[in-house]
Amino acid sequence: MERIPILKMGPFLLVTIQVDMHDQLAITLQDDLTNRIAKERSRGVLLDISALDVVDSFIGRMIANISGMARVLDAVTVVVGMQPAVAITLVELGLPLEGVHTALNVEKGMELLRRRLAADAA
Amino acid sequence: MKSASRVAGLIKHHEKDLLGDWIKEQLGAASMRGDLLKEADLREQSRAFLSAVQEASQKGGIDSIDGPAWENVRQILAELSKSRALAGFSPAETAMFVFSLKQPLFARLSKDLKGDAEALGDELWNATVFIDKLGLYTTEMHQKSRESVIERQQTELLELSTPVVELWDDIVALPLVGTLDSNRTQIVMETLLQKIVQTGASIAIIDITGVPTVDTLVAQHLLKTVAATRLMGADCIISGIRPQIAQTIVHLGVNLGEVTTKATLADAFQVALKRAGAKIMKGVPAQEKAGDGDAERA
Amino acid sequence: MAVAIRSPEDIVHMRQTVREHAVRQGFSLVDQTKIVTAASELARNIINYGGGGEMLLEQVNEGLRKGLRLAFVDQGPGIPDIELAMKDGYTTGGGMGLGLGGAKRLSSEFRIESRVGAGTRVTITRWK
Image (cartoon, rainbow over all chains, first blue to last red; front, side):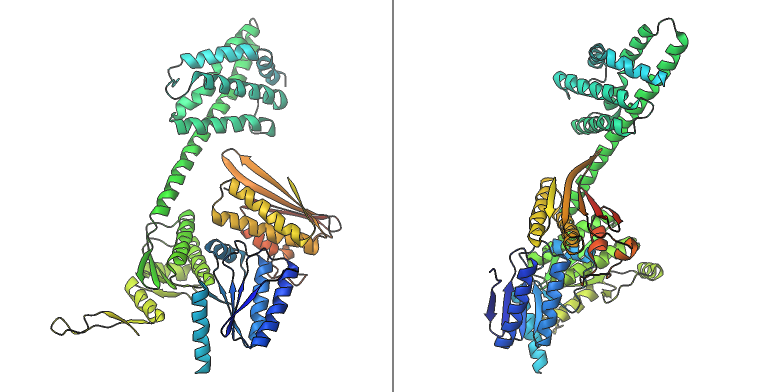
């Protein structure tokens, strides 16, 4: 069965989405991710969508779900690498993506996560 | 209608001869631009056009050229006008393609209706109105295609001239000058976002000091730009809001929400620096060695 | 041309087809993304609510205007209240309720016909 790989990067997890997601894959990813967050006690999830040239409401819902579930498990989700054309389209589409953090790339995403964790710990 | 089908019927029966006469007419005309169009092409275009006109007039009559029966003819004229406009023909020269059909058509009508002055008068009238419509359509299409060339050139110019300036490590600025229409704003938005990705900037300052008016549409586009920037993981500050523009924005009821706005680019830069974690300190002037007003990272 | 839309995998295939045509017609990257995203939304609707259907794709010419027209057709239950269905956030299936309104916003032209018990047809056009 196809699975999206989840990489551990210190206290964070990195998920790189590179294929066209369909329902089964999305569900599997959410399951795998929740399990992994719990297992590794990860505090942050980086969702790399730089390879996605289309983000529709289905993917949007998946991102919102992942963010929500992670939060319940005390982890922060940062979506990174959104392409400009996708950003413009999403604004037009009106996708809310409330409470979802974003950063330009993985590096900046990790910076963001570290800052938040430092703020939390302070 | 009897009179309508007469012209159509005539075109059908005498298509080959009409074509010959018409081509002769075009080749002899002063407006024939032998430098811009080869004779073989002219022959082919004329043949195709006349054949399409013949078909359309049979199907839909000649009272109007707007219906579905005339779609093919309109398409041919549109393409023809476009290619002639691009080649450098003037609108009049292009329209002559159609108008020069009058002479051969009238000549044939006169021959056919010799002896029936009233019918001939009617038919000449029908024919001239019909050809005028086609000629006018050609001119319109010529115009439109010129406009679209200008538009395209403007777009290319805009893309080249949307200057995104890197002010600092993490900060870019986009000083906008001139009127912002829908089209331009879209391009500006795309260019800005691409530059943000390229430079890895976290903050973009959009300065509208040089924009004379802001209406609801422009305001909406600006807000969309800010939203798109945020979605990508960067942030936007809008600066250069003159008092008049501030008034317009309030009167229009545009909700700027959480967008940070500053009166001047300088103010916006200060805010951006602070957010980026930098600080500008004024040092003691030249006598001392340290601190010449260098910016230091906080 | 027609593309069957019966399973989630078909959506992926349809997106690629639309993207190819949009590229071939010379649409800008943003316009490509908009039309593919709109198509994706409408295709999902067909699968989630329409019980499967198809997408019809055609390149359109109107004088000097060129564009891409996509029609999404299903023989499903139909939409009883179209106005309500077009409102953002309205959903009968746990989605985000953005499909119809979103597709409209992302397209140059939008048309919807639906009859309860007979099916739905949504047509979007993007001009170059």
